[in-house]
Length: 91
Image 1: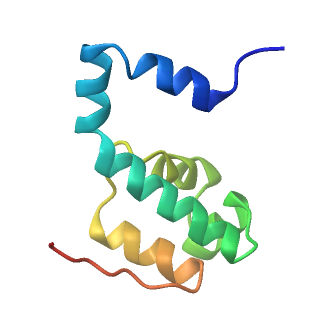
Image 2: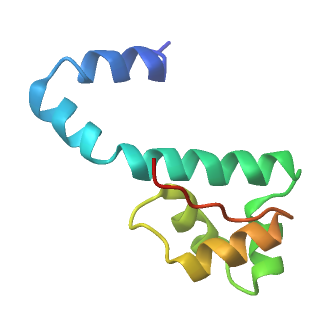
């Protein structure tokens, strides 16, 4: 059986180049995780979110990948589809 993803991630983060690239993408990863969490909390599939947004499942998959960063308009449409809202903060 293969290694668990968390173990592989920890091993890769030991490499300085990989670590630097990972840190640069941290916001994208966080956004992607939040979108997926919101969809799961709403008990929806990507296909159901897509239907509610008037788009395709592949568009939803790209939004949930976090790369490239989605537009604010797309985030609002996604949030509405999962019965949520977009909240932007600068801290």
